[in-house]
Image 1 (spheres, rainbow, N blue to C red):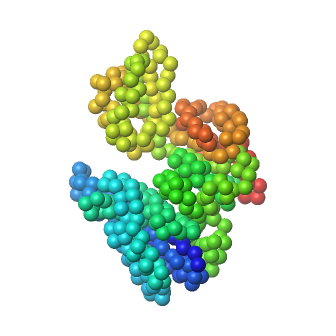
Image 2: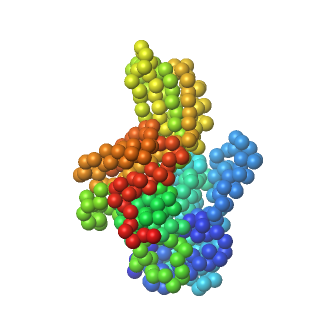
Image 3: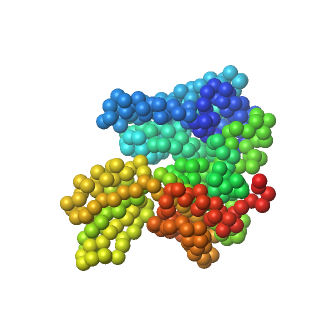
Length: 419
């Protein structure tokens, strides 16, 4: 008997026909003798609809009440799936985040999971019940409902798997695994059998939409084996433990991690570039720029400080998520007197292209190949950032697809048998 967490996203729960299909898939796991907990997202588009209601009610809504509203989508799908399972002859019950409970911080709309009480959950599983748990939601100190932010259901699933010591966490989505890059851009992209936690964490953080970054980080921390699978295979498809999805695992489970130099290429158009001109070239000036951004919980990615172009001043360029551009501009303008910059120039017509692979640790020339390949196609690099297993560049957004294609070929990632 195995303990399995199955997570289904919004497209998998979009309407009763798909919910019944999910119930049939869960039933097969139960009939195979496994103990199963299911984590569900809201129906596709439902969270956006609820967010719209909050904004319509007030542009300055209370985050606590916002969480009450937007968490309702997952409550509905968890109840509907429990009903569908019962109708299919499978004992099941839904558990809301506050009923387990899933304890979180009180950062409403972006809460972090602290711990999960599994006593009642374990008793339910031992009785042969399927536990259906709404993703995305939890309980803050003071007994207020919280939500985990966009994509939080993946994090919920991994956290539940860690808490109940599951053998595996299966993430069912609208893709059938992790590819070397977006197959819509590169038809010759290959599906990967295994990816390390570190590689998936980097890929998720730089634009790969398969898994949420926080969920991968939690899986790595708790050593939870995660499998990415398609929820749109037929009911007669093989069981999940034999399906050709992608396993996210530790390096110890991957033979010869050095053999493949680059694992994948990701792109992200949700970036904005900000340049502050004539910043005083003095100690503490850069800290004065990024302190107000940190205070506003805005993540800064690439940072470039140019050589002083005249006596005592320099330009500083950095990127932030495009969704945070307006707040970034406001925070910087409020601190303008302390920073002392000249102009604030911003550009949203940019894209970040990243190559990722643990093989970088033992191979030289990865960055050189990237720069040479892009240069040969006339693609200008506006900014660069690196980590131990990643190189990212900022380019004009119109050149995104060309950059992904030529890099995919340059690193030898094209599938030989693809159309």
